[in-house]
Amino acid sequence: MGLDNPIHIAFLLILLLLVFGAKRLPEMGRSLGTGMRGFKESLSGESTQSALPAEDRAPVPLAGTSANATPMATAIGQPPTPAA
Image (cartoon, rainbow, N blue to C red; front, side, top):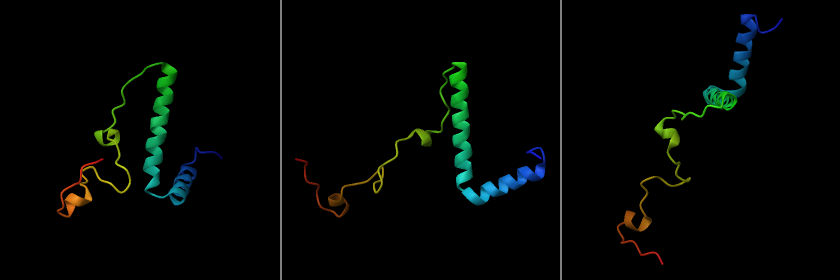
């Protein structure tokens, strides 16, 4: 009558997929794993560098901008004006 029956586990997985969607489940799993890893490290007292990919450590540009944005004046062929 618990989670020992594979049918119950399958039902819960299908329910989670319907509620959260296929895109959100990997993010939730990754977040849960990171949280559990941090909890385990805090209990053991070890401090290790996490091996995050470079894309996760890179700063995110503000909305509406890009990393290689050029001023509008130079984009349309006019020389940029110096900042005051």
